[in-house]
Image (cartoon, rainbow, N blue to C red; front, side, top):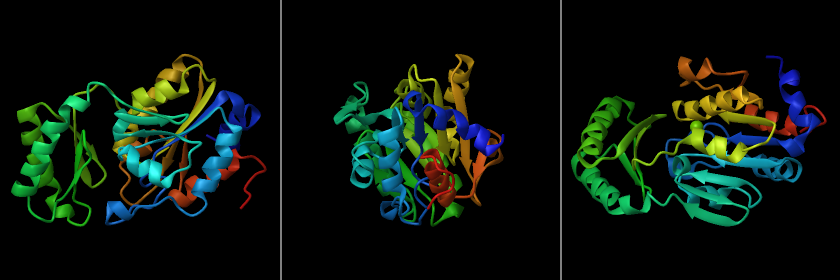
Length: 257
Ligand SMILES: [Mg+2]
């Protein structure tokens, strides 16, 4: 897809368009310690400017809402933990079925810290948890096997992600349900993502397209990109820098700084 053709419907009628983006690997460079990931310089300003112009600008992430809120502007709709937590127009919410899983998740977190090798970083996220193997990819198989066993025993669901595995409550939300909910009746929507966790968001765009929405799937290239994700791209951008350049193009006036 030609990039300027792809962006034309957004620039023509931003008041009828949604711009939705993933966080890690998309707005922020992937770093060894996930706690230190930050939006690239310029991203916050670009999102703020887009939010003033577009019907909706949203960040849809597996991160906890509290992390997203600490690093992203007030004007942007936020969806955390793959849709379990959100903030929109200043209101915060959590999926009602998720809260009851906190004690179960806390138990699994304790077991993970006791049973897994110390090199696997266990991130407790309240109603979900993540096992990070970024610094020790050789432990990927062990982390996935442990996650499958632990999740199966208590009824959590497992989701693979980039150099990590997530354990979630069995609540029927993912980036796809989030994208459909956020876009609603708007006539144009894009999602920018880099990872297998973003596939449901791209699927949601396809469902929206079938209802007549003009959609754009943007994939952020990286050395770790999977062919499955790349295959979904209408447009490919080269890393989070490329995301920022595209966001600036969505502000109009071509490739300005
Ligand atoms: Mg990502």
